[in-house]
Image (cartoon, rainbow, N blue to C red; front, side, top):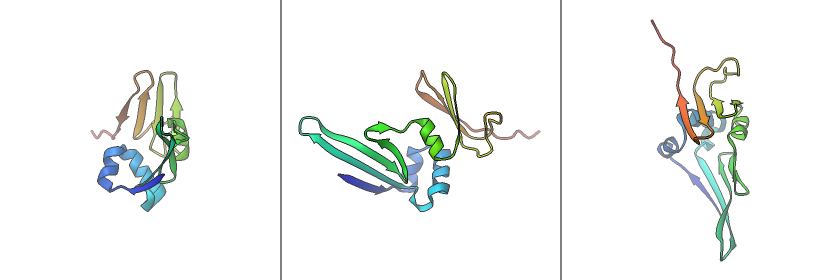
Length: 124
């Protein structure tokens, strides 16, 4: 069974970080609010299994497995850096490994928590 939903802007803003949603709006325009879920019944004993979940054209779940942060960053053409205990996704198109500027998503792997930093210029 497949179901497609068109989410309102308020719902999207509750589900996704603002920086990610801004990129989705630029990349997918009017399709950025589309969510498609495909599930199958494996057997009466085990019940439903999620085959895929797509947000616009991005498969967040494929064959029951979540898209990892690195693949998501690659799909959206974002700079991505991974260290032993940290992962960082940079939302600023000017960002690079040597110019870590702008909005970013930092994930601390052992804690499985994220911190979003928003850097703004300081005026004196």
